[in-house]
Structures are given as structure tokens and as C-alpha cells.
Amino acid sequence: MLLLIITMSGSCQNNTTMEYKKLTPEEEQVIVNKGTERPFTGEFVNTKEDGSYTCKRCGSVLFSSDSKFDSHCGWPSFDDAVKGAVKEIPDADGKRTEIVCANCGAHLGHVFDGEGFTPKNRRHCVNSISLEFSPKILPENQDTAYFAAGCFWGVQHYLGKANGVVSTDVGYMGGITSNPSYEDVCSHTTGHAEVVRVIFDTQKTSFEALAKLFFEIHDFTQIDRQGPDVGDQYRSEIFYTNENQRKTAEEILKELKLKDYQPATKVTKAPVFWKAESYHQNYYQKKGGIPYCHSRKKIF
Image (cartoon, rainbow, N blue to C red; front, side, top):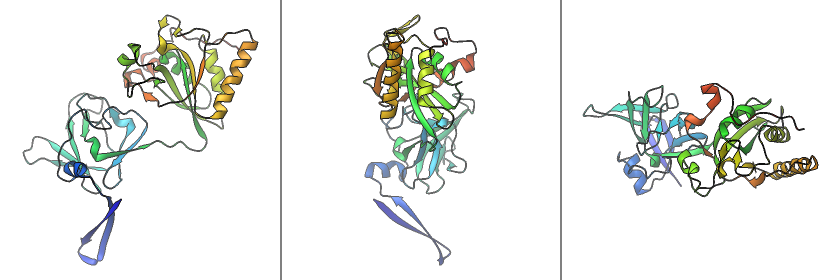
């Protein structure tokens, strides 16, 4: 439901109008009355999905998921804002700096400098209740695939270099808990697998080509392990996003069996992908070296 707000500037001939979302009493307490939600209770404290964060009241885009990081402060944290989208207002006591939506003035939270969390050295500490989230929408010529093949560092190393791959991220899928941490997954109590999400250009490569590469870079006959890494998070699994991907994966498995392999790879409908912590992303690209439990063996 939208509430029409009319703002007059100078004379009736210069009226401008904006449509604001009607707020609940809880939202109004923070957004209008500059309150603060309790720490670790907000909807977006731990979210890692790709997309944009918008103003709850007017819908303006404020922050990108690329700037979100884990500060463990209890509120969503961003080290940057969309240019011109957030206005800074020093508090009357001079101790903190408030941030508001530059378009409608909605209270977001406060900004802090010099804490050293990220190279940008800024933290926009934002109330979840002041935000809404819009997932990233891929262009028509792009698609997504999800592969689990042991430690996601090595899998990302090989898949990220494939022709037609636009981007890769590592994360967790297939478990019973929301927003798992690496420590949660390693406890073997969540059921998640370490997964690489691959965004690829369908005009330059195909799901079939990527799936065949997936099989060539790990030992798909092993159960709940890959080389020295042992545990259910290291299982071999393809998480399909549509029926064409499912059929393609199953056809490749049949082909492998005809080659006298005994695949342990599961083919499962893709559930929610939980993006892993930033220090896991592009590990070998940042640290150097080569994967210790993955190498490519030509099969197809």
C-alpha cells in the first residue's frame, strides 16, 4: 500500500510528488523517529545474496551487496554506498554521524570511520528495518550453475578459468540451517556442501561443457571426501536450476557409467545458495599456489 506525499516548493506551480510506502508502527519508530532496532535481530544482518538494498520508504537504491561485509556488530554493515544515495548528518553532540536516505530523509543508521574492517575503512551501520532487498537479475544471455566437488577453493580455481564463465562465488547449499558459517558447515551438523556458483554466458559456453569440466577436475567416485578432505561438505553433487540441467547431468552420469566409472555424484534440485565468507572467495587467486586436492584429468 502506498501513501501519497505532496511536497510544495515556492508556489503551487512547483509542486513535486513522491510515493512513500505506508509504514508499520515498528518501521516508523526507526525510519521516522530515528530509533534503533535491537542488535542481531534484523532480517539482513547475515545475508550474503547478490543484489541491491533499497530504502524501505521510497525504494531508492542505497547499497550494493558487493559493499556488504561481516562486522559482527549486530546490524548490516556496508563499506560504501551508492553515489549520492545516502546523506550524512552530524549528530548534535558531535559524537556520531547519522545517515539518511538522500531522496526521502528516512533514517538508516550511522556511519563510522577508522575501524579497519575493510580497505575502505568505513562502516555504514544500518537498521535492517530501514531496508528492502532486490536480488540480482541476470541478463538474458547468462545462466547459473552450482557444483560441489570437494574444497570449493580448488573447484573455483578451475571453473573460474573456463571459457564463457562470467563470475564465480563459493558458498554452501543443501543443508538444514540458514546463513551457515564455515565453522557451522565444518561441524557436520548442517548438511551443507561446499559449492561453487558459476555465472556463465550461454552464447560462449553451455551447462553441459561446464558439467563435463566439473567431472574432470575431481574424483567423482569418492563419497563424502575429496583427496585428504573428509566430510559430507566435500561430497560430489550438482544442484540443478531447471529440467534441462537435470537431464544433462543425468545423461553425463550415464555416459560415465558406460566408461566403467562408478559415479557417487548426486543430482539435486538447487535450494538456497548461502555465499561464503569473503576470505574464502577466489582463494588461490589471492593467495597464489595451486589446488592441493584438485587437478584436471581428460575424460570426455
